[in-house]
View 1 (cartoon, rainbow over the protein chains, first blue to last red):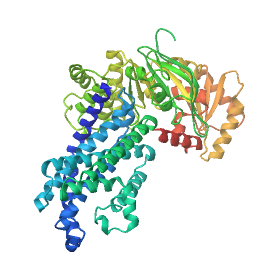
View 2: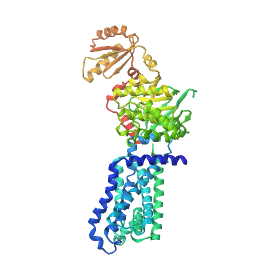
View 3: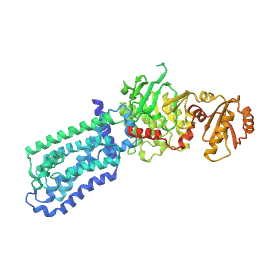
Length: 256
Length: 344
């Protein structure tokens, strides 16, 4: 057990160090949320007066969605780095050492989650500068980070498991896009639930992304809605656990 | 298992889907401290063998002991005692040389002080002192390969597996790398198991060579023993014609004329030429000329050489290893390559 912790720690370090050294990566992490916040809120500005919209403006309504979206995408593509390692022979070389198999994926997932938390904080700062305020204050922000960390953990583990199933860059990218885009749209990210068509309102009940958005939005716009918050936490914990189980199983059985 | 053998295989076999016997029941032993080479063409089963011995692949049947432990029953113990440098260099481009090496030190549970010490020694050994803190993405191909070697040595393994250590390197870098491999065999006393399809490499580095083809070991011995097994000199006859059919015809007729003659030990056609194995080349050449002349077979060139490993390979497999590289890939080889990719 201690060896798993040690190995995980060294793999997290390696991953984070590589990320920090990519200037393009840092630039995109900063630039993308700004772009989304500005673009989307400009496009949908006139919806701000619509009845049923929580928050005082569309920006206020949409900011929680951008936080979730940022973490969703960065974690869903987490497996890409593993794919690069596979193609470069880095993974095979590691597997020939006594490194604990599980820590290769847990290390990658933890590094992805930590990155996601930093990215979420960046969106918070940008949103705050644009005038978004958080109803529940600093403790609320911590809870928001917990929610998106669970979502990120689930998707990062899923992504790394899928890489071992698919093994090819083209198919991996296509499948991840095929899964993440609908999950994003089949949620209350862009429209309040009561304005969604019935079928979409039903579908989103099965979407972990939506549980994250509902939780985050309540904390930012309304306050502590404990009944919803518990439900979101429970669903996300279950989702993360299932995906981590899937990912580690893939690493145990299919990584060579 | 003998006291001195570090690797011993027992009917080691790997069958891939589609009934491809990549490794077909091989038996061999590698002694402590020796450099042992698997020489064979692409698709012969070299990499598959290495991957079974270093526990990346499970054998279909048979087994092996490596550094005293069974690869099937006790893979974790084997991993602790072996190092591996794959055909693709497995170094992390987005880290410095020192970070790469240090990470592997931690994987082998060395304490920080030991890691620091070994990293210093290994950079010296592979001639990378001064480049420790540069990003690997700025390293040349030869430097990466040397770092890759060092990463396989950080835990002072009993055996290191080198899969095609110099493939893709320019000739100068290759010779340079041979020096390092020789040096580490001497200074660290590590047993080296390497695969190659370069004759010169096996000849230059290996104490003993196993010739492997289509998943089977054809023969094992020192370079000298293998060459002596040919039993004399090799006389090569080249036809005065260019077309394939005409060359085949020449080889057929010349072989017919020469086989069974007292001065000829064996004949082997190869790439539209004929290799004639003889006891004494100097005495055989006039006799060969006379025999061919009397049957009206014209020869363009006739050359004599001491046997090379290429001749040895030809004798045991019926093909030249050089021709292997040039010929179109066969279906079986393609299938093997696919399998290899799938299992990577």
